[in-house]
Amino acid sequence: MDDQYSVLANKPLTLTKKRLRWLILLSSFPLFGMVAAFGIAPNTSPEDLPVEEVVLGLDLPEILPVADANMTFWRQESIQRGDTIAALLSRLEVNSRDAANFLRDARGVKAMHQLVPGKIIHAQTTAAGELLLLRYFPGGSEQLVMEKTDGGFSISEQAPKLETHIQMKSGVINSSLFAAIDNAGVPESVAIQIVDILASDVDFHRDLRKGDRFTVVYDSLFGNGEPARAGRVLSVEFVNQGTPHRAVYFQAENGESGYYTPDGKNLRKAFLRSPLEFSRITSGFSSARFHPVLKTWRAHSGIDYAAPTGTRVKAAADGTVAFAGWQGGYGNVVFLQHQGGYSTVYGHLSTFAKGLRRGQRVRQGDIIGHVGATGMATGPHLHYEFRFNGVQRDPLRVAMPAANPVAAKHMAAFYEYTKPLMARLDMLRGANLAFVD
Image 1: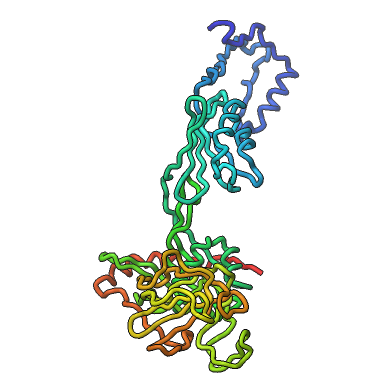
Image 2: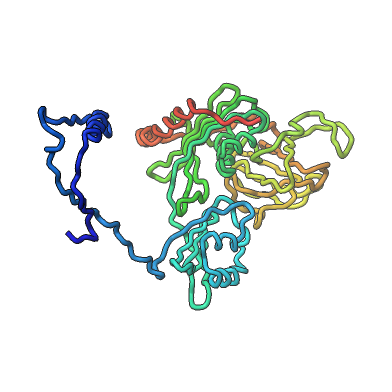
């Protein structure tokens, strides 16, 4: 073996009696958890011990080649509050020339100047800091891609590959539904679905109480590993004043879909209890009410819902637009005609839904206008009337007919599909719930 790759013990090893005693003493202690016994045969003189030359071979460390300057790497940086593109490019170690060109070409790209904290910027660079491609997914249905070209960067929007994940959230109402939903981290679109699904069974304007709780299972779409948007509610339970209300989504083979109770009853009623998602009642149905504008006592043949100007107003049921325009004290008003002699009225609107016109067909839940204070109104609110054969009725007291349940031939598939969704709700019942003051 060559001298440079070996260690050579050149001198003979001579053990004195003193050194021998220390060797025997040290060898009696455990080494790495093992006990080894060393000894010398009786009547053996230490001077007679054999001396050997020991040569140990040592492996030299592997010498790695220097990285090729043209090798590419994927880097990523999380957007911090107050971040700028320049700061992100610096943390991504992009060289000054490409950074300057990128900032020039991204000057007119709105998304690049409205960065969303928490989102991730993905960048492909070389070892020398050359920026080849930058990908940013702010959420929604498109991701922004900026790719290097001769002398600059080209910008395009591409549809990300979306993956579906199931989310489960729980919350307890301590002050308001809004606060509980926000504290539980439930997206607004999911909250709106919860209200729509259970609107026929729970009056979210009058019946909510402190201690009510909800659990919800819903689809969440992810693009490039980041949350894109919330999807459909799959199952939900809302416990209102101790009474549980459950709903589960199901689509039959024939394409019919909807939300049903665990035993297959349709939760959709012919009419919604309220045409607004969230609000409070300021004036109910009454035979005598002091009119705030006319200053006289008169019957109030509808329900007034206080809500901010611009709040969306929904059609309470499938129907046809009988009138959409200005009418006296109603101000901007929409009249809808429904089957069976029913009609509904929506007054004091600030604006109508785009394209809404007489004779147009609308479906339950379609947006027909927005809350305002037109006509005889002292503030923004919706005046809502429910009529049968032209006579106003109290919509909060009228029994609403239900839609068709799951057909008998689809019940086996219904139970098979909904069983795991019900199990998730049961599991959430025992979880720690989110509280809010």
